Length: 252
Image 1 (spheres, rainbow, N blue to C red):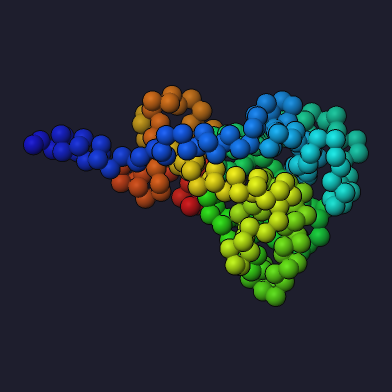
Image 2 (cartoon, rainbow, N blue to C red; image 1 turned 90 degrees about the horizontal axis):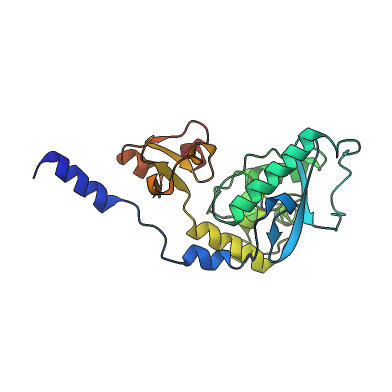
């Protein structure tokens, strides 16, 4: 057998397998009408509103309801600003893509400056938890240097003003229980199921670049030229190099 034929067969043999047919579709069915970013994404049949100021997103909440736990955010005079509207539209688009399994990370800026320092520390550490992985309240407490503040960590996460964007759904109780969630525990379970089934890394057979799903570098790649990978190490063995924009090797 010639070297070229051997290489071709090896590539076919080790090519990543897609999720079982219909798995992602069945999980996504639990979100019901999760798209339409121009009017705000819907979560479990409820329309949600995204609010921002000039620095980034400040709140994700049910349409028509004010998040009373969120401190004043100094938005006065900014609601009509074009920059604020662009941030909100970007947040709506990225959230809709995430809920339909077409995005594994967020690039929209988030402004947590109005929150207490302890809560900011908790949410910033939570934002570092990789897609598809989970941590515990105790783990967060240790990472921020407050190992005895497990209950306070839970309270801070319960008051997360930008759920999903800052993935507090990836934090569980030490005993493995789901704990609470702003949008309800069933939705938290659906998010974790989605992340366990949806591919995290995707490459383009033309550019030979591997990206995190949702990266702008892949928008022009046709479906037949896309291939999924379980890790950047696997992609490298197939001759792909990590994207410099989304840096999948750093997120793994």
